[in-house]
Every structure is written in structure tokens, then in C-alpha cells.
Amino acid sequence: MITGKGTRLNEFSKFDSVTAARAIEEYGSPLYIYDEDAILARCEDCIKMPNAYGLTVRYALKANPNRTLLKKISEAGLKFDASSLNEVRRAHLAGIPYKDIMLTSQEVYEGDDMAALESLLLEGLQYNVCSLRQLYLIGDFACKNSIEPGIRIKPGVGSGESASRTTGDDYSCFGIHENDFEEALKYAWGKWIKFKHVHVHIGSGADPEVWRENIDIELDLVAKYFKETESIGFGGGFKVARMPDENQADIEELGKYAKAQIEKFNKKHKRKLKAEIEPGTYIVGNAGFAVTKVIDIKSTPFADFIMINGGMEMNARPLMYGSRHPFYVISADGNKLLSSDFGEIPDDYEAVIAGKCCESGDCQTLDKDGGAITRKIAKPEIGDIVVIGGAGAYCSSMAPFNYNSFTQAPELLLSVDGSLKLIRKRQTLEQMLANEV
Image 1 (cartoon, rainbow, N blue to C red):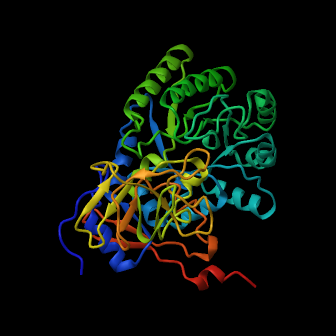
Image 2 (cartoon, rainbow, N blue to C red):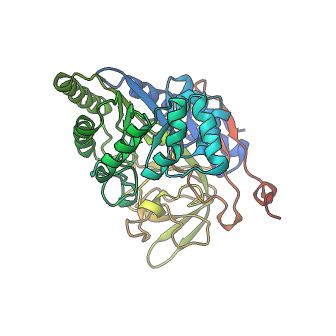
Image 3 (cartoon, helix red, strand yellow):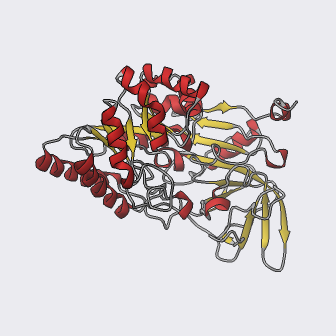
């Protein structure tokens, strides 16, 4: 039985080294752990964000849609942003009413899916059209049932952690371009449809300065084209500092800027616009940890490779984006935090952190071009623990967990009272194969 007082891993969370070892002892490895306290604190930050005439905070389901987390986030007062019809269904199965969900999707609904969408709209689901085709397909139904969809527009500026995470510029396919506004409005007027909500999202991990620029552009477009709009969505994508040398977005300052600009808009146009934001990573990113064990150590002329039992199938972000995550090396018994990116790191040892997948890109230390690089860490022994921080968002929800027929890792919640609760069981081989015929 693992006992004792552990060392906290970082300032974001109460998660400590002994808890990591205890989790492995009870549930095996690898696994994910989410800190409830840290999640609730970020929810409170967003709710308190300064605003002019009202603010709706929508959690981006795609970041991490675990049922228990959705319930906790809902209880904290947040609404929800969905990117697919199944995300809507998933949230509702977690107890979220349809009226608390806004669907903004690249999907095009026809047949049974369109019938399902129409049924959910009658139950209160909110829907942003993101293309002229989506608008044409929902137009007659919206007219007949007095449904007022929102519209996602392309602002022409974008910013994200990488090019593939930028969604608002001319090189992305999200939203309706200004060139098509007149056609969209002409069609909407002909169907007596009013766009009461205008939505923009410029990317994940956005530069705060570009986020501010987006506010100005969106307000200008609303003034020029959308005379009946009552609320505007600024998206999410707030920059989160996963690493100690990164600067986190100051959402209070961003809120103050948005508030001032909306008040100026009202002074000029006599329209009090409500605001919406849709954070995902900001809520859960630094509240999550992937807990792995060292299973092998290999030495080459290039570097030592520390092999862990949870790599790209738990966290594909380094492979997809060249993302950096902090590492915490812990003794197998949890009594010692050997090194941390947020504390002491030995100067005399560097290694590549690699996973167990049969894939050269299965490294947690990659550069932007996908090449393996070394990072300074404590030299671990086989059986020691390596915790990957910043793993609460776009890890369990996005990783190719069945690659090489590995099973999906379990998820635990570190509750406010310090107890560990299983919130997703480890997948079995039988479950993986269940749909094969």
C-alpha cells in the first residue's frame, strides 16, 4: 500500500507524486488523471470574465467530453459548444439539456441526421450555420418553426498553436466568407430568418493580440451586415501555458478589451450585444495528467530513449502539432519527485521520451518538423513514473488509442476531497473487437 505525503507537481494542481503512484497501484498504467479543483477554478475564471451586457461561457466539448467532467462543468454554471451531432447527443446523455448546447459543425445534415437535428432544435438546441449549403438545408424548417439559427463567419484573421490549429484565416474552410454574406442574408430574408447570433473562432492557442483584433473585425462586420444580431461569439482558443516558459492568456484583460469595444459599439449603433466565449483547453488542459511507467531504456549514439508505456496513443499532440508538454519524473514508490519542468532539472542528463507504438513519430519530444529531440530530465530507472502534464485537453479525446491494438487508457478524477474516482474504465480487447463481423 502506497502512503505518505507526496510532492505537488505544479502550481496548477493539487495532484502530487504519491497520488500518481497510488493511482498506478490501484488501476494500473497508463492512465489519465483530472484534477477537479483545477477545473472548477478555471470555470470560475471564465464566468468572472468582464463583460458589457452579459456573457455566456460555453465549454468546448471536443477538448474532453468525459461524462463526469461535463457534469462538473455544467454544475459550475457553464453552457456547451458542440462540433458534431454526436457531441450534442453525448452531452445530453450526461444530463445536459439541449437548450444549453450550441452546435457549430462542419457536418452537412440530410436524411435521418437532418430529422434528428430538426427534432433537437424544437427541444431548444441552438445551431450555427457554417456554410450556404447548411443554411439552404435548414431554411424551410427554420422558417416554418420560427427557428433563429446563428451564423459562423470567417473573419479573415486566424491564430493558433500551429497552422493546423488556425481556423479563421483565408487558408481554413471554417465559416461563411464575407463574399457570401449578401447571398446568405438574401436567402435568410426570403425565409423570414433572423441571424440573432454571429459566431467566430480563429483557432486554438490563439495569440491574445490577434484575439483582440478579431473582436474589432467581428464588430465591424456585425455593424455592416447583421442588423438584427443580439449576441456575438468570440470563440475560445485562449493560450494556455503548459510549459513554464510560455505565457498564458490573461482572460481578464481580454474581457476588459471586449467589454470596452462592445460598449463603444453600443454608443455608436445603439445595440447592446451579449457576448459568448467557448473555452476548452483553458478549462481542462492543465488539469489533466497522463501517468505512465518507464518500461525500457535504450541508448544510441544520438541519445538515450526513455521508453514509456503511454505515448502517442495517449497524447498525439507532439506528433500532430510539435506541441511541448511538461514532464515529471517520479520514483516508483511516489516518495520522490526526481525532476520537473516546473522545478529542479538536472543539467547533466538529456533523453528522448518515446512510447511503445511501432511508429517513429511516437515520441513526446518532437520538434515542429516531427524529428525526435532530447529534453533535460532526471535519469529514471525502469519502473519509475513519468507523468505528462497539460494532458486534460485534446489527449484522451483525440489520440489514436487503438493503434497497434492497444486499449484505451482509463480516466480518473482527483476529487475535491482528495479521493481518486474511476470515471472511465480501461477498454478491453473484447470491447475493441466488438463491432467486427
